[in-house]
Image (cartoon, rainbow, N blue to C red; front, side):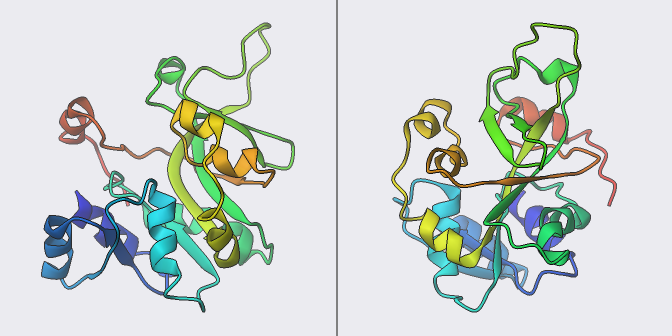
Length: 213
């Protein structure tokens, strides 16, 4: 799974480097075995973005840093381009993330993180619960959040020093720390989904998942 994630990320032409940040010797052996780059990190680091920040500190010249987690073996290179599209357009957000249309059968699934945005495309809230509450028949502008992020390098260095927050802990969603501390996350949209693999059921579904590059 980690090999597929690494190889798909490496196919993205706009990335200048791809490094696997891990505290697992097993994962490190897999990646070095295929000629990839690895940086070993402290096993006590609590979140993925903080683990990425620990590596990014060693590369101060990088302007934008992507956190792509190893549960995304079906990530598409064009999705990574969509994730950093604001910077490619000359904008300079602190942070971006990616989302796609939410399927109705995922509305009540706590494993499917929902996101709603303001009119400028900045996240208002992320939740494992259904949001917003369907009080009327008005179609709700809600998307299915993908757990990958891009950070402006200087903001990532600030993020790693932000204390964890109550909503972050309650929902177990690290991106809520950013919102609670008063910062913005631009939500970039993609047209299709991937299949994250975090459970035995998702692993079984992955055997039949059709990947289109």
